[in-house]
Image 1: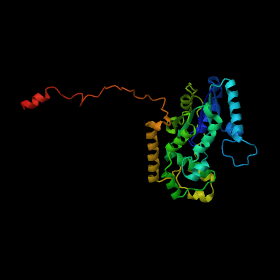
Image 2: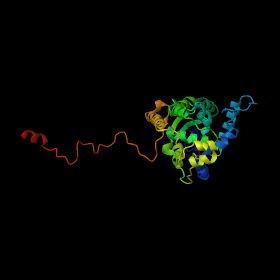
Image 3: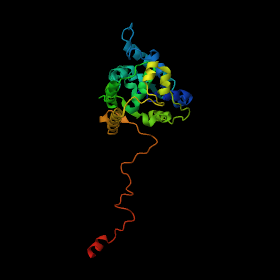
Image 4: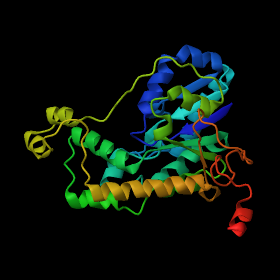
Length: 312
């Protein structure tokens, strides 16, 4: 049985993918695909591998968590599962920690190193979904402000926009924490809203194309004003639609950081990760055709040009 860890990131259509998988459960069963979502993982299965604020009453919680995971995986294999997808963006880190640091998943390496102890060499691939920082941060801020967090000050937003930590650093942390797994990166811009393509890319199976649904979108300005306190609502811009907390210069910095990340991935990512291609697009081969490579326009008169010049 192949195991793929889908570790996020947040705000990258993970809930939509899980909703799609749940709506097509019968089809996935026929394919031999099982999905462990947040409900399965946070119900105690990986307790001991992830940070826990409460007291630890039992000795060696990592060993106990490893035992629970292996028993559950064995049960899946015995019922005919060929590919297990373990999907939860909290495996990469929490939104609160990311927001508090103003940087992308600062503790990702430590969290995933502990997770590796539980799953170990059973993991064949680690799937990381990334999104342009100019859209990731506004989506995260809208969600967190809607949950009661304060509006970020201008200096705070500027620190986020100019953070030295990019997706490249997150991916490097993942590769170091899980050294024997293939790290593959799935851009949000390619796979969001197309969960069947993502499932096919992850498993190699022909996925069902039914029951697409966008779940857990970031609240827009009208929705934010309806749930926040009066003083926060008054501080929000009076416009409607998507909240845009960053100015033009900050957005430019965020877009430049993402462009650098994608260029690094397209160039091989120093051997640490592979960038997933859009399965609906055909790439040029090693030896593309040479049609249209002749000099000048097709209706140019090139015959006897030098002779005419000499006679003149």
